[in-house]
Length: 360
Image 1 (cartoon, rainbow, N blue to C red):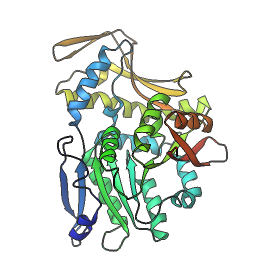
Image 2 (tube, one colour):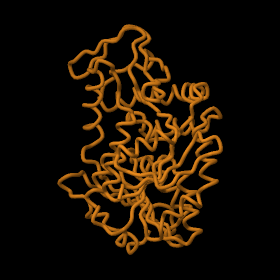
Image 3 (tube, one colour):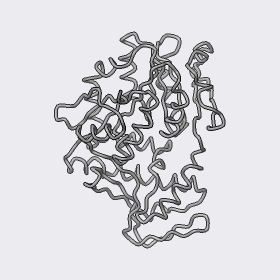
Image 4 (cartoon, helix red, strand yellow):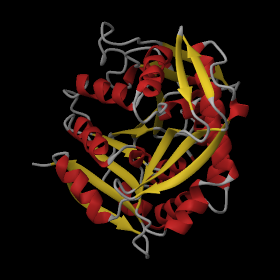
């Protein structure tokens, strides 16, 4: 990426006040001879450990114990999740991919040349590449911004994306944000005076890792910045296929990695992974599948001088995944002060991609 291209990227260096954020920019030279730069901007209001360690302690102290789901998304966790995505039983990935292939031209119709496309929880960016290729074929110049919590994985995936869209011959400009959803919402709020239109891309049913109320609050925080949202959500009501998809061995390895990540952040071997198992179950009260760590025996976890006791078979929640049909999505959007502008569903109406905007 040339110096001229970097300088023209709208308001990146100045859009988030240094007093509110740990703002760092990484320039990495890759791929000689073109020496294309990877631009990563750290928009975290607090370092990851400073955020997650108090959340770990809070979750262990709660009546129904849990650990923050962000523990799952370190670099190794993302690699394990890619294995989950490749499993033939993991229907959400194949269902969304098939739907996206069918309607990608309709989806990109809502994105104009010169717009900014910010992807929340960008992951491996395989679906992103399809969307960006479609925009490029439509001769639209787009600023793509990938937001994720793990710097190493984000840098690697941006490098792969740049190999598809090299700056010297592509109208797709690529940069990255290191931060959480909350960090991204705060960054956008400080940048809301920018006349450039922004669309948020939130695929992979990721929004449904939160309860309906929490998802509504997230939608509200993003829409109030003036951004539009393109959201992919699973609406399956088949509990057998949900169980096969979320309770396989690949899911077990993905979830248990969260304990290793917790140990890393705590800088102590608080959780012996050999003493924990994995369990999943459907929770009809919130329309969600929930995954848990399960104590294999009576355990005591020691953190910073405090003790947390577990009985054999006691659970500690890891992550949830909502299964919300279109009517539920409309309710969540309405509670957020948004409106459903358009939607694209598969033939079984079991998976949808939705275009959301703030109510006029």
